[in-house]
Picture 1 (cartoon, helix red, strand yellow):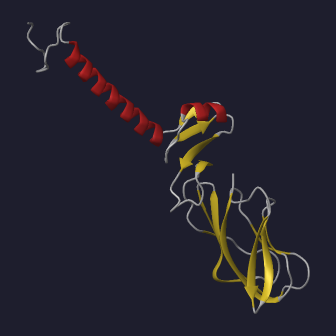
Picture 2 (tube, helix red, strand yellow; picture 1 turned 180 degrees about the horizontal axis):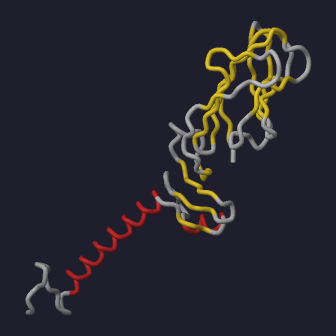
Picture 3 (cartoon, one colour; picture 1 turned 90 degrees about the vertical axis):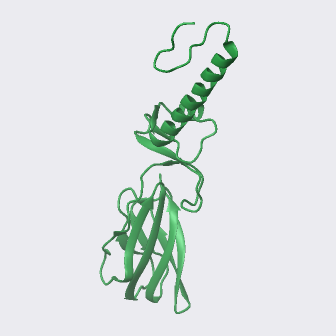
Length: 193
C-alpha cells in the first residue's frame, strides 16, 4: 500500500464502499454550500421562467437578478416582517422618509407624512390638518418615486365622526377624497413593484 499523503487515507480500487461514502459526504457539503450562496447572492436569470427553473421550490432569502427587469428579486417567506409571501423586488429597508405637504393650508402634526419601503411593501402614516377640507379632492402631499402604488389605494380616516377617504395614486399624490373639517390620521401599507 502506498504511503498516504497529507495524512489522508489511501483508498485502492477494491475499497469502493469507503470511497463512495467519502464522495457522497463531499457532494452533500458542496450542495449545502451552493444553496447558501444562492440565498445570499443574486443569480442572473433572463426572465421569470428562468427564475422558476433555478428555484422550483424557493426558500426565504433566495435571490435572482432579473435581466429582463434590471433589478434584484428576493423570495420572502417571513410574514412577521413582510405581509406577503413570494418574489418581490429587493429594495431593502429605506427607513422612515418625511414628506413635505403640498398645497395651501395643510399642516402636518404628530408624525406628519412619512413613508417607509421594505422590499416591495410601502408602510405609511399620514397626519395632517386643514381648517376645512371642503368638497372635492385635495392633493395634500407627493409620493416619492419608488413608493408609488401600481393602482389607486384607498384608506379611510375618521375625525369627529366624519369619514374621509385618503387615496394613494400611481401618479404620485396623496389625495383626501371626501369633505369635512379637522384633521386626518391614517396608517397602513400597500404593495409596489
